[in-house]
Length: 164
Image (cartoon, rainbow, N blue to C red; front, top):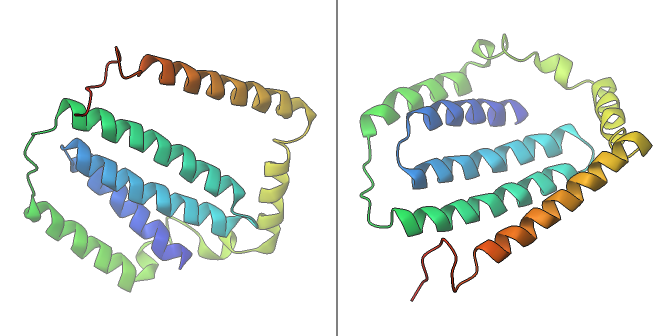
């Protein structure tokens, strides 16, 4: 299951390179965020960090969605089905023949319990004393940025268009 999610994430990355419309790029980015959060949750023992990543990315995507709909609200959405055919064939080939993707990622190496323990040890270093001050500074910085963005985008004189 983990391998299929990684293959799908790789395919979405390639598709993202060929997209031109902001709404389609946002939808692919949302799908990639969900997949990366699920992969992170499967690789660690808890889903805490993947949940935080998902919440932050969805919050940013909501702001981008609001901004793009106010700037390019009537832009036509063009579908290119000829681009979809090679990528669907590539995805089908990767899903049926997993030996093609094994040279990218060694599946046995990822699934060992020693790697899980080492991964959790690395994550616990973020909470220890030297790094905790940096994380506290980052939280305060993000909170102040959130307050500044709320003040900038007030309904009376903000850069966003008012919705009637």
